[in-house]
Length: 383
Image (cartoon, rainbow, N blue to C red):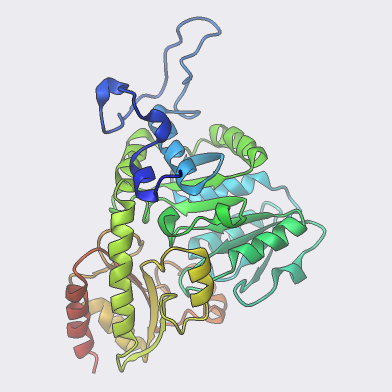
């Protein structure tokens, strides 16, 4: 019988019954750059920490189990993970990508990947059929679901069917829901990306990124690339991620409960024009998300009636912090226009629905009524 995800966040089954590392319940931090060899042609299994490190290896085993892959790779940031993954492609390869992506991903694709000879077609994968955009040189479909920040929901199973039919890789950024709520590999994806900085770490105290794949061929390429390019996660940061993952389920449940409360409250407010949260029954992706995920997450995007009100909200919040990032225990509010998507050309931002009136909430684990009370006070000063 398969174990529940909360158990898998705490225990690797293969390690049970062992008392290695002197019985330490907290996996040790192997803060070393290199390893002594027992003899010529002999190895302990670890040679140099750019290639492999026991603390990072343990974290990669946990992520492999949580996402149901054959291998996982822990990188220094989420962007380092995407950058490494795109090294498996060659100049002239074509990628079909979701248009509404995290601004850093768009910046990477436009300024680095295209410079390296990759071609892209961007479209709303929740509404448009990517199959119509497939070319002879198309190699992959790349999606976020839900997207950042407009919360579009793509049908992962449908995307996987299209990818498999045409021999393409399906890559899914699963940052917003984490393995606790969604497992794209089980739905047919080939590769999953995470910014581990967010929900997996969960405490706004470190940076990390992950690639998890169910393809042995892709895993072999990535294992070579990670040792060659050198962006593997450091031992102490690996330990912080191991610690954060232990409480992933508890944090995801509380934060998504709070998000549902706030989304319901926001849509009743006079100055709020739109609330984008898949947990609302009227969200166009609500039923799809119910079919492919175990929860709706804790990310909310909303628009207010004027730019002035948006800026006033950012100035007035106190307990809720005006800050970039997401997925930590504290509730954060972000202004995509000048923060996460500042480097995205204005015409692209506007086409994706990101206006000067757009705000994004990453809902934390505070008492929900305290969050509502804070926003009530802030909104009262916007009338």
